[in-house]
Amino acid sequence: MDNSILSELEFDPARGALLYQGVRYLLIRPETLDMFYKAVEEKIGKGAHDAMHQGGFTGGSLSAKKYREVFGLNARESVEFMARMGAEIGWGKIEIARLDLDARVLEITVASSPFALAHGASKHGVCHLLRGVFAGLASGIFDCEVDSREVECAAMGDALCRIVIHG
Image 1 (cartoon, rainbow, N blue to C red):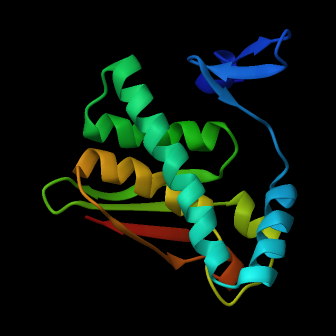
Image 2 (cartoon, one colour):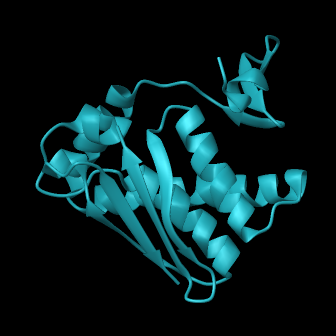
């Protein structure tokens, strides 16, 4: 299997912890996250979108900072690494559609998003966690607040998910 992330995972049996470069990860079914998201959305409405985004933002910010320090990655390399890592940990086939550091724009596409597939048909984008992760990454490399939008989503019937982030 050609997966650099999985080949470097470590298991700490004393803690029951799965680690990559000293950072803890966990395996969880997309349906579990989706049911949590749907339950929160039922209770608080669109605030659930923001909550999932914020969770992703925090994780993306922390991961991007850690991996820039560990691997000495520049901005472009950080985005490439996070896209490859996301794909290798099962978040879909993530590709960089546009990265313009001067204009502070990052656009990614995601084929086979587990979030969209688990959620099913929707009138709005549902890849809030993915959108948040890449917004957290973009905020760090652009060194400013960002706005992130999912402009296409497989759950809405689009061929793939497309996330556009502006600084």
